[in-house]
Every structure is written in structure tokens, then in C-alpha cells.
Image 1 (cartoon, rainbow, N blue to C red):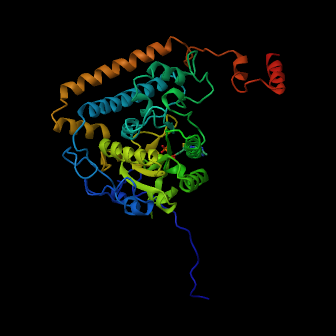
Image 2: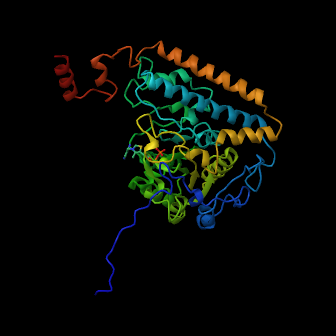
Amino acid sequence: MDSLQSLRLYVPEPTGRPGRETDFSYLHLSPAGAVRKPAIDATPVDTADLAFTLVRVLDEDGRAVGPWAPAQPDVPLLKRGLRAMMKTRAFDAKMLIAQRQKKISFYIQCLGEEAIAVAHAFAIQPGDMCFPTYRQQGLLLAREDIPMAELICQLMSNGRDPMRGRQLPVMYSYKRAGFFTISGNLATQFIQAVGWAMASAIKGDTNIASAWIGDGATAESDFHTALTFAHVYRAPVILNVVNNQWAISTFQAIAGGEATTFAARGVGCGIASLRVDGNDFLAVLAASRWAAERARSNLGPTLIEWITYRAGAHSTSDDPSRYRPADDWQHFPLGDPIARLKQHLEVLGAWFEEEHRRTQEQLEAEVGAALKEAERFGGTLIDGHVPPLESMFEDVYKDMPPHLHEQLRQARG
Ligand SMILES: Cc1ncc(C[n+]2csc(CCOP(=O)(O)OP(=O)(O)O)c2C)c(N)n1
Ligand SMILES: [Mg+2]
């Protein structure tokens, strides 16, 4: 008995901490262009190797290489993509300042992750339904039909907030833009999306669903339930796992990203899976189109793990300098999605520094004007505007039940 070891648990730790540089070799990257592109009707098992490699298109020199690269560059689309990513970043930067100025109470930016939502927006079609988390504002900002001022009204919960103050700031809802109401309860979007996709198929529609979840939230049971239903019924859904390395202050290894990949969860559940460079606009576009085509052709779901880095704080309530090196993003080997697409367009001779500077200025002016417009509808934290008490009871039930009538009566005094 003396030879028996006492048992112990293993607790994963990030290699980097404040004052100690991260060793990013844990990411296991593949060179650009090295990973094969399977046929659209590949079986889930046939994608098993792709759950452990990394689909990349843009190389170090900004060239598009390998089987996932387009036969011909679509320059107008690439320019729209770059502009939409720059717009998303400009919007985030301005809203962070607005939060510091107490114009809004809370904000979540997607700095460094812009390509994932923006390129995906170009891969889906009108009528499809996205079930995003709070970090896919790029889906909305990539569109021309969602006024920025209206988004800001939501952030302010003011008189023109389409959600009428019922949602936390950033929890947008745009049915007409295929943007399902964001759920603050992590992982619920996954089961909602699979259910929506199954309903679309039951009705014989042609629209597909796309769901988002973070690395941390995959530890929720809803994630696994969604995978089972998607697999069994071959639901027409894209299952996006955004591995941005962090879940607030918790490293992705704590959610189970160390000994295997998040993409491998898909293969283990009989779902075709890809692990993709999420900071490579062209890789995101190609992989999203591949998954969308599968879903649309009744070939079933695809799970895609997007490798990226949450460059900013989790939210305005977080201070990442407490738990990770302050300059971590500068060392992240997959770089900055905006800088990489800009470099590619420059290599194509389709983008110039002067145009970049002008676009940046235009976008900043556009966001500034939208903020001013939104402020006209009141509701910033500093102007003291408070909606009428009664409004708290409205829009919850179609017909207000008796107990709420009673509560309203009591609240009025
Ligand atoms: C069910 C549930 N548990 C916990 C939280 C609190 N919470 C909000 S965001 C977050 C971290 C999520 O990390 P991740 O899934 O990696 O997404 P990311 O923020 O990195 O995009 C946590 C724990 C929540 N909103 N819902
Ligand atoms: Mg995360």
C-alpha cells in the first residue's frame, strides 16, 4: 500500500501572466495554405484532421494561398469587408469613450475579433438567422440598413431604444437583419439556433441558422445539448466557437482547450468540424461559405472553431492587466485582422495609405455624428432622464396578468 500515490487534480494555467510573456506555441498553428479543403459533402469523420490543424489563407506577405484561397480576388467585396471591420473598430472605440464619459453604463468591444462576424456577414443570405453573443456587433455594422444612431440609442436605453430599455446595453435584437435577440445567459444561443434551424427544415424553408459561443461558454451543458440535436437531425446550422483565449479572467484551457481543441468536440459528436484562423478575413469567408453551403444542401451542421485573441478588456467592467501580460496582443501570432486584410489589398494594388487614412477619418466622423444624433433622444446617465414607472410593466406580456396590474397599482402608491 505504501507504493500508492496520493491522488491529485490538474489545474491548467496560462503560460503568460502579468510580467511574464505568453508562450503562444500552445496554439499549434499551421502555415498559410497548408490545410486541405474537403469536398462539400465530406462526412464528419472525413474532417477529423481539420479539427486539429488550422485553415489559413493569408500568408506573412499578405498573399492569398492554398486550397481555401479564392480563384480570383473579389476586390469590391474585400474593400467592403475592410471598411466594415474599420467601422466596427471605430464604433467600439467611440463607445468605450462614451462609457467613460458616463453617456452609457456598459459596453463590450470586439477589438481584434472583427473578421469573425464581418466576414461571416458576407457568407450568409437574407432570411438566414444569426444567434450571436455580445461580441458579434460586426454582423450589424457590416450592413448598410442598420443605423448606427439606433444602436447607440439601445446602448443608452433612451427614448428611441428599439428594445425600450428591456435589455442590457449591447444586447441588440434585429429580426429584419437576421440578428436574433442576444441572450445574456451564455450558451443559450446554441440551443436556440439549433431549434430554429430544425424548425426551418420542418417547415421546408430554405433559410439556415448560425450560432455563436465563446470558448468559456462551451463548458455549459447547453453547448453539448445543441451538438447532439444538430448531429442527430442534421440541422441546417453553423456552430461558431470563438476561441479568443479568455473567458473574462479565465484562460481557455480551463474550459478544456489544452489537451484537445474545441473543434474536436464537433467531430466527437458526428459533426463536420474546422479549426480556422479567425484573424484572416479570407479564411473566415471561405470557411463560412463552406459551412453555409453544406447547411443549405441538407448536408448537416458544421462546427467551426475560430482562433483569435480578445485584444481588449472583457467589458468596461474588467481590467485584464490583473491577469495577463499587458502587451499580449502584440505577440499574438495571428496578428490583427484589419492590418492583415489591408496588407492583402495593398499587395493586390487595390488599397493605398491615403485611402486608408481618408476612410478612417470618414468612419470616425460617421460614428461621431451618430452619437450626437442618439444623444438628442436623451437617456444618457448624466442627463438624469428616467422613463415613466409604468413602462417597466409594458411589453412583458401581451395581456398584462392580474398580479402585474396589482404590482403596478402598488408602485404608483
Ligand atoms: C450562464 C452564464 N454564466 C456566466 C455568465 C457570466 N459571464 C458573462 S461573459 C462570461 C465569459 C464568457 O467567456 P467566453 O464564452 O469565452 O466568451 P468571450 O467573452 O470571451 O467572448 C461570463 C462567465 C453568464 N452571462 N451566463
Ligand atoms: Mg472567450
